[in-house]
Amino acid sequence: MSSDAAPAADEVRRQAARRRTFAIISHPDAGKTTLTEKFLLYGGALTAGAGSVKAKRDRRATASDWMELERRRGISVTSAVVQFGYRDRVLNLLDTPGHGDFSEDTYRVLAAVDAAVMVLDGAKGIEAQTRKLFEVCRNREIPIVTFINKWDRPARDPLELLDEIEDQLVLDPVPVTWPVGDGDRFSGVIDRRAGHFVRFGRTAGGAAAADEEIVAAARAEAEEGSTWGEAREAIELLDGAGAELDAKRFEAGELSPVFFGSALTNFGVRLLLDAIVDMAPAPAARGDADGDPRPLDSGFSASVFKVQSNMDPAHRDRMAFLRVCSGRFERGMTITCGRTGKTLATKYAHTVVGRDRSTAEDAWPGDVIGLVNAADLRVGDAVHAAGEPVRWTPVPAFAPSSFRLARCTDTSKAKQFRSGVRQLDSEGVVQVLRRPEGGESAPILAAVGPLQFDVAEHRLRHEFGAPVELAPAPWTTARRTDEASAAALRAMSGVTVAARDDGDLLALFESPYWLARLQSDHPDLTLHRLIGEG
Image 1: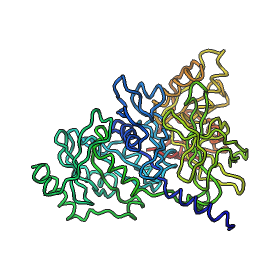
Image 2: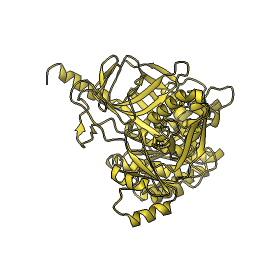
Image 3: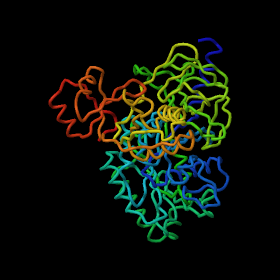
Image 4: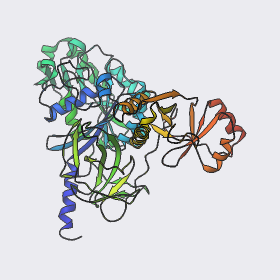
């Protein structure tokens, strides 16, 4: 290694060590987007007005939810990227969709992170979407920090919640903080590491960091009364059971540090953010498509995990989001798309906070950057600097369970319709399937859940000016097939074969019972399950 290369490699490793790239996962309405806002508040990216999704009319919409449809419904239906500084670290926060119908988008986001924060509602515990997202994290071996939220409201017994995490997720929960009281009696938490009590003070509307007072145990016992005694009894039980943090088990995804608090009032937010800095792993070498780890100090490489159009409606732009995996990105450098072999200019590279963006002059492993109008990039692409090509493991498509037949209701807008459908397909908003008899004019839209169709219809109408009708379709189940089996399937009733843009063929069945019978009668046919089914 040359004398110039050695310092450059050292700088890449030093900058990577400063990064923490993580996602927030939760069931809808557990407080995920509110927590995202409060992280920005504590990181200094928001100075006032931070609030929940259902904010008062005179307050601005949340920083991470920028689509009109999201603001109207009060939920996140796309993932957002937020970068901010905290304690001399650079935090890249990927806020995932807050609805189960968008689990495919969430899966792609989780492919770009090194850790996750799992947010639970203190009154509800583990919910269906939480469980599903946790399994994705487990499959990807992503370490998880748990935040039990809404403790300023009536909540379940905290020991009962820990048992539920252990039983339903087969995950060892280890409380780092423990609540003193709940609901109106919630006054603070005991930091098990330091042994002291952190008393919180409310601020108007949660628009500023919560006041925190460190109180010695003897004084807390005298001032907090019965709630302190209840908390101390629970901690003695935890100590007796050996509930202690183990960094290796955490990074292996076997153990989760647990924090209690309230994102709405900012109680416990700082302690959680400190834990992300102190506990979450920094970026490490990522395995390529062959399973070989690519060193952080290799030449620049990145993976495309999201593509989004019209983030700035005034300019009708298209942004591809890249997670930097190795090397240093410098604005203006020429990069290559591994899938197409085409080179791309990077003059318009940005870091993003919701709809706001700023020019990114450089980026390091773990960072997320957006390339504007990188029209040839698709989700799952690998990009790299000049030199040896890089390939990442392909991003799989989820099994669709809802289908619609799309048709433009104004023939004069057919071009806009075709353009919009292709754009939604490249972004992964829906899967677009085509049959020889339908082609571009009557594609099949396939989705994990029906809310995806609402987003597709809204965007086709409002972004592309294409009035569209989405008619119900008869299919309920999809299987991946091949050319040889497709020929036989096309001759059968109750099944339709359609192609995705990437060339994959899907066999669509009107009934899972017919699929089961066909598999029994024709075991030689290729009918593979897709990820996320069941």
